Structures are given as C-alpha cells and as structure tokens.
Image (cartoon, rainbow, N blue to C red):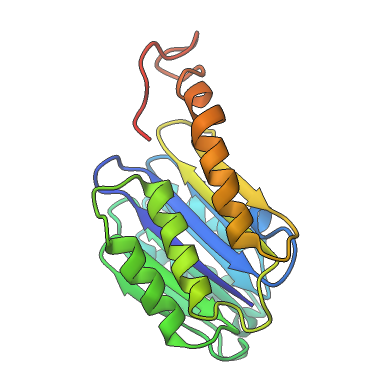
Length: 224
C-alpha cells in the first residue's frame, strides 16, 4: 500500500525517508530516523514499534541486518509487514512479508533502499532509484523528492496515493526536514509545493535554531 525510500547522504551524513501511500497521514507513523544512528521505514500492515525499537537496536550498535532479524523475530504478525533498516554505515536490510499485497518487493543500493507493496511493479522502484542517483551531490531532501516523483510517475501505489512525506535528520535530535501531505488527491504535487515553501521560508530558521553545540542558536548555517 506504500512505496518508500530510506537513504544516507554520504556528503552530509544526514538520514532521510520519503514515502507515499494510498492511506492518509503516512508521515507520522512510517518515518523513524535518528542523527548519527540510522533510519527505519515501516509499512504494509504498519507496526510503529518496528521503527521505535529498530532505532534503539541500531543505537545499541546493531547492524542493519542484525536489527532486521531481531525485529522480525519479535513480531508475531511479521508476514504482513514490510520494513527497511538503514544503519550508520549506510548499509540496508529490507523485509517483505509473504502476506504483503502484490506487487511487493525492494531494491537495495549502496546507501539507500527503496521498497513497496501494492505498487504497479518493480519499475516503480527502478524509476525512483534512477531519480535518486541522478544528482549524487545534491541535497538529500531534493533527491528524496525526485525519487517520490519518479516512482509516482511509474504508477506508484496501484490504488493511488493520498499522502506523502519527506523526513530528514541532520545533526540534532529534531528533524531538519519534516514535510507532510496528510490527505490530498495529488499528494506528490502538493509535497513538491510544500518542499519549495519549506526551503524558502522555514529551512533558514531551522538552521539557526539551538543545537547541542550552540544552546543559544547556531551562529552559522548548517548544510541542507
């Protein structure tokens, strides 16, 4: 019912998630990421604790693969889940349960993975991967946006998306990017509109907010 991408930016060390789905409000429950630790996207018959516990296991030093195995072993309905784990090194591991609605599967590349269920086919993931890797030096949020746009253009969720999100963690405990479309007839187009507004109006403010290193507010701009 969803396609998503989890990724690490090799230039900045940021972790990000982009997703689109046919149900409302994908952003809050699917996206889990922590600065310096990694990211988890949980979808299909969504279990938020795969993300919550996954980040905790990554913070304890687990690799993407070992965390995936641990999470899969703890969930009694794992056959209906799909989730992706990205660790601090950029390694990925993806689980697709046998009861996920077809077409369901994933595509893993160095530093990112793309996964989907009830999507138009593997071409959705392949198109998203091409778009994401087209500008490897670009800003992570922009590359996530391009991936979602390309995946949607190839059919995306076969029921049609109604919500979409981009979530990026930089160096702090709060996100650098957190934009969501919760219910819209064309959520990718709306997400692109919000992406432009966020970059212009909010991102400059976030760059000057207090950080752990500068509790009164960072004197310099942080990378996008």
